[in-house]
Image (tube, rainbow, N blue to C red; front, side):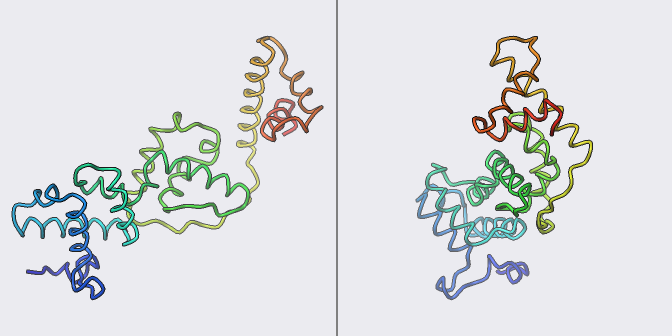
Length: 235
């Protein structure tokens, strides 16, 4: 017997292109094909299958999962799971870009692009909003290992919202005095550390090394030049 939700949830509607079955029926058949006997053995009777379809369809609808996401999930199941996946496992297979570490490095690339005045590539708006919550300075200056726990929590909080504001166009804003000072101090610290490693002299004035770098700018990367300028108070 069909419930009222069957008529409002697109995953439970019948499709002529699928020979009159629903997307959930199609998914059941695909998983049963990938995991013969293993998948079917999860269900005692027809009601158990109906309960599975209802629960997964509801989750797909709430999470904004698309048919393309599910197609990717089916493909990933073949290499990720020896046994039929649970709902959380299947959702991860549908959207591997939302795995925290993968999402973090996507966010870093996106933030770098926005600094250049570009939109950046964001596979999900929750990744953008999580990066904004962490803050541009930390995202661009701290390693994943330093931000891992904080990032996991912020990303999970964003994903739990279910709805997200559109990603706004980038804005080339003037840096605040506080951010400028923080960046200058960080640059000076990095130059000191690098100078000590190069010279082996922990008491040597890093400005000597910084002046040497600026005397031959063509031989250094942009990042090193910025640190050298910061050490001399020029940036």
